[in-house]
Length: 248
Image 1 (cartoon, rainbow, N blue to C red):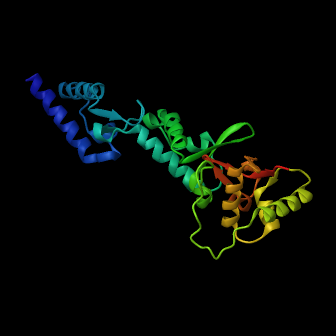
Image 2 (cartoon, rainbow, N blue to C red):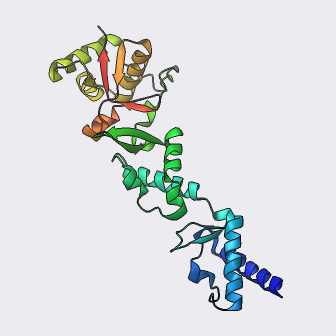
């Protein structure tokens, strides 16, 4: 008789959770009998066993549970998706860990650090520093065509009618920018303004110059520049570089 009661409780719990899908159910949604009744004691005992066995997971907290079946218990994936969406929606605004964590709770919140590291390792988020603290930027906020690794050959332009600046033109524009700002490490955007023309061919020429070694890129401070200045950044080995210096 007792085994039959346990089986009925297990079937009801799993069926209700299966119907709920990834949204899950709280205690009220499970509609379990009170813990004082014989049936209630059996059902709560079954629920605890299902949790311990991993057949059911709690995406919420002990006080505010959200029960789901095993197939929907994916706290790492939930944290990953939440962080990526927050960073993507932020655009060019830098996101702190606290900002990215907002909205997560329970089991997914516990997986926040792991998901954040995974997003950085996969190149989905760019890790920067602002006032000594880590901040994060979604890669979609960077100029897509600047994503070229320094050790690989550049992709040939599909529009040959757009003139690519030569080394002499870049050197002249760089020297003009140095004369304006007064120091050798200048924003790429300043050099571009002095040079004129199309931005993307200029950036491709700079990437080639970096590979050749006569242009030295530097990271700069992402938090202190404008969106227009960020558009001129070179993405080298997964990190945006805002400044350059030309060797004598």
